[in-house]
Image 1 (cartoon, rainbow, N blue to C red):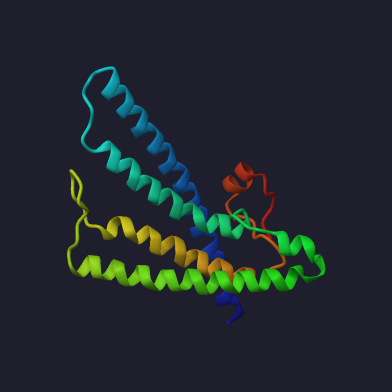
Image 2 (cartoon, rainbow, N blue to C red):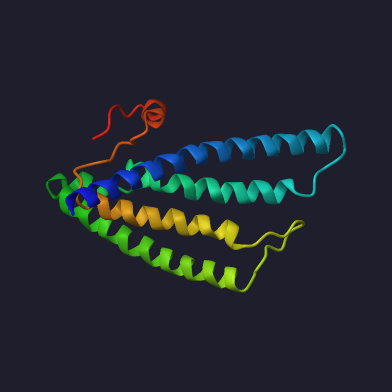
Length: 179
């Protein structure tokens, strides 16, 4: 059982690392599409019909691919006033906050998963110039919240942030060797 748990943790680490790399790629694509649209619109007077919706969709994908990494590395938005005022209670406060993260992200994952299924089964498409199945976009919300739920759960049993496994991410974020 311990080996299975260790393997599952390692797999979750790598999936989070790959998501972070894909988030970097999607934000680069977002910038490229945006710049291309500016050049086409203002220099050639030939705007595209698809760039605005593509940038919006890439933004959503980027955010939800990167969110699990932010939770894992404790780089998410946090109000640390209580921990700063009561440092002796930091472990308890962190446990309460991580428990709240598990509950809230788990609930949103549940809602999002149900919505993904509804969109898939109902063949719901986006209302855009080039309609695509809506679940292609909303599934990233489910992934981001689902993986973040697992990270909050794991952080209940960790002493601090969990470092990335892939060396490319450790080098890019300056986080040294794996735990």
